[in-house]
Length: 464
Image 1 (cartoon, rainbow, N blue to C red):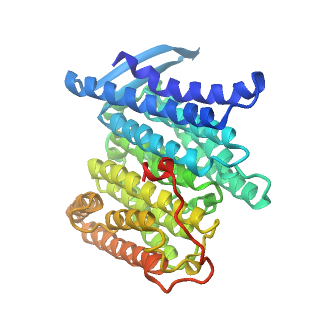
Image 2 (cartoon, rainbow, N blue to C red; image 1 turned 60 degrees about the vertical axis):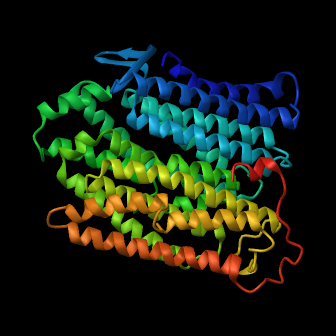
């Protein structure tokens, strides 16, 4: 477990190498660029596997590793410390495991792009920041990772910056999420003023003895943290940035806007859940924000024609499911759905990327039609991912959603209402997913792309 520090360090080294090498020795060969970019994440995934095995074998509930003191001013002493427990191990496995597969996919999808090296460097920096976010043992270090993934999201959404629309979408994402980040920062200031520390373990220990359930101070802090989570995870009313974020390359949509960054808000609430338990009003707000987002995004997905925007609204909707789970106290169910969603939604986005590339960058589903024969791999992947998304029995999505709905039903007073909203959300998911699959793969063959053939290459096929 002493190798824990390597997990954020390896992607960071990959970023530094890809950024500095062209400035010193000239442009790297594309294959070497892909090897460094994907290889650094693959090594991080391997270290995660080894550290995870050691952690589970040790029987410890958590493992802390202090690397150095970050800064000290007055009564505030912040260490650069890492914490591994069950929650962070699940998140690490998702970030490095799915992240590695998406990096491999990117070596094929983005290989011909003139800025391939810059793309891989940004991707590596994002993974380093996300790993830091989930491993941080204090909220100041967590906030560093939090802002790091926001920066990388901006850089990657506006990756093709020569198109003014892409720049607009990147700025929109940056500004809208800043609203939530400001609320979160104020919450951290308030926490430090009241408790005198930002160490997560100490906050959890002290808060239960310092505040009684329903105390106005802890309720305000919980609402401010919820504001940060709403912005980063694209929940009502700050959900508008995520669909526009589809302006970035498709692997970005899979990594940042489906599997990892947008679940940071879910992670934040789960990590600080003792504070929310002391603030029942804030916890109920989490549930109803999630339920409202689940329905609004589900209805919106029904009206979209862009394949990536349909999946984007689906992501907003499914994260609403996770917020609903957190609000009803289904902490494990929320993280379980986070994990299952990361796999099947990344699969759907990467499958969509294969379709888009095969059809010469076509995004309109009504110009696709009848693709099940011409794009067999994409068809198979979409059927598997869609089955899990709509929660067909025996799929991963079925078990995670089932757990959430059981907890919702058990809630006193509001339980049946929340259960009903979750059920309607599940029905909407089935409708817009069926519409997408039917139009693209079973609809009448489109005349717009008569020469469509599936993109070949192991780098894209193997991750799928």
